[in-house]
Image 1 (tube, one colour):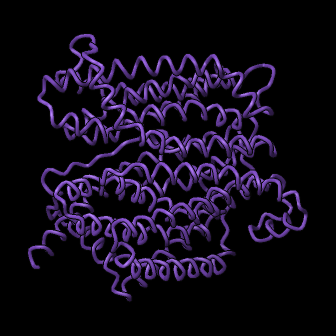
Image 2 (tube, one colour; image 1 turned 120 degrees about the horizontal axis):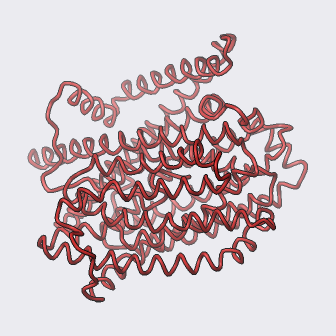
Image 3 (tube, helix red, strand yellow; image 1 turned 90 degrees about the vertical axis):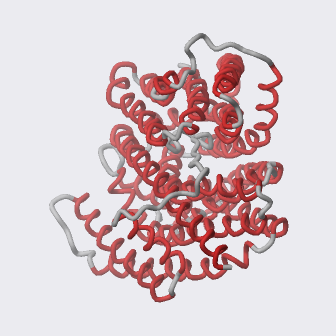
Length: 565
């Protein structure tokens, strides 16, 4: 029993190391993404220009997620690790040539058919000047470069170069920022699309020198046979289909938003990008870090250990995500105004984005838990369930969004919703129905996954109930304290409005965080003790190593390389 406890403790400590590495990388990438969004908000506000820009992403992103998953690091890394160096080079050559041919063919077809599909999906945005078609065609280069980057990322991670891998999404966002600052003044909206392509190219190119140094690509890649390619694609197809469903949801919601007030697409995407920051730092980091351990437990036939690892990661997702959700709901306007409130981004844009941000944040813990459970299914070799749930979720999100947009024409319902969300009298508030639809279906789909996982493996719910309750109580107290402090410091003003908003939000938020920590401490929360111990060990340079043979695997394939656009 003592040895088992020590082994589990070792695994948990290794999980924290991997999570902190991934979370730090996600934080850097997210901060740069927020700088990118602030520049766009300052230059354009929630306007028709950004509606065009975000709508142009939809087809290229759908192609990237579907095709990028075909060359997923989750498939390529196991294939590389079981091959000798010379066989690795032949394998990568075959995958590279096969993917390039497929990507080129799909992109050409998409470019030719873009006018038809864009007119069907976005009739209000598909104007006679063909600007939306042009932007989409330029961005079709993005999935090609990002797919190639996925292939090189497998080499990078097999060689344990995680710092280099973490640099790729930073370069992606730098390319987009360059498009806003330098290319847009030269070429207009086409310059924004060119910045996206530049970022995708840098995401790929940064990994070329080290791959070459490892012995790859010393000659032109050669296609050595169809068998290996088909085996890889066959393994990846269920995952590719499941990942594509989230992009189908975005495609449907974006198409619905195009029928609403001008700027609605921009409001929804700004809000989604904001909630994607804590999701990437917490939910994605824990789910990605847990994957190798989950796969190893399944390979050893240790079903109870597999469930235990899933439960451990889930408890930590609760620990962080529920308090963060409470703070976001209370501080939503402060966060949006400080991050995006500049230039053309006015108070109306702020109020709508803040309300949508809060609605999306309600499902934050569910989104993180879904990422974890889906990886658990993949580790167990069961990809059919995530695909079915993702497909139903996509259909449900679009259907509910369309239904709510229709209901929002009811005057009584509009007034009630605006009062609850504190956007009374704000034009364009119908976009909030889309944020509600996304969050509501995310919660339902997570419940379905949890119940099926419990039915299939057993013991999960019993292991997480207490942690969920403690986290929920901590979140409630932290949110309440934050709200009270905001009222108390409300009279504080400075010459700068932004500084005043920041100061109030910062003081309220810090008091809320302290309240959450106090509740966790009073309850003797296990996750609080584990995180405090892990942070203490890192500060005092006490060595914490992941379990030997377990690599940290991260991939950008589930969306754009640094989160949403």
